[in-house]
Length: 270
Image: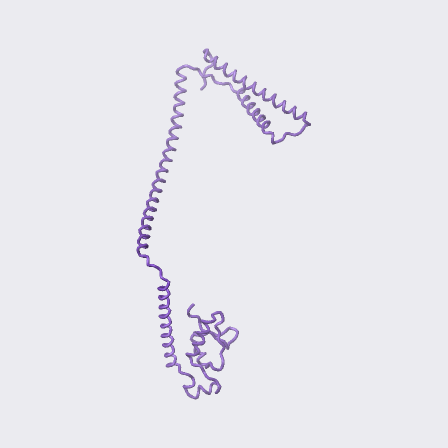
């Protein structure tokens, strides 16, 4: 606040003297630090002119303090301080300014605290909901656990073995039924080549005993199940060519890529 410097009161003169004294003290501190720095430099020069070591933290701090005080002193020298009269009117104005600044800072602080409180309330509500869900889940799991304990049936190895044996027997029985049904169908619709007239006998060698279609399928099935890595079967004179062609044309059997005299059953179970 700019004030007219005419007609200074004794209090104003005392304030001016205080500022001058403060300035003199800063100058004296700068001169003292400067003397210390010169003394350090002389000691370095006497030690052989060694360069300043970066690890000398004390000397570095002193130099930084000298620079800071020098800059502050220059600012005080360039600045003409305004003398504030200590009359009641000025004090009231200054008090009002300080109260307004304090009120503004307190409003900002209050707004910040209210925002943080609102966020904390939201977090608390969300955590409370999560806690309720977890408690409900724990209650449900505890209830199910108790129900399971009441429904536990003692494990019996003998009973398990009996059940597995029963299932295996049923599976084998079902397998036998399917094989018998397939055999009856094949025997009915695809009889042995020898029983179908002299024409089929003339198409193969007289000494070759031709396999029925049922036997061919059994050989292919057994080969696929016993050695799935190499399920091919070599065709000889006992395999009647029309049956082989029938299996190949209907996609039941596949011929080897490199050897046409080998066939295998299509893996329908995969």
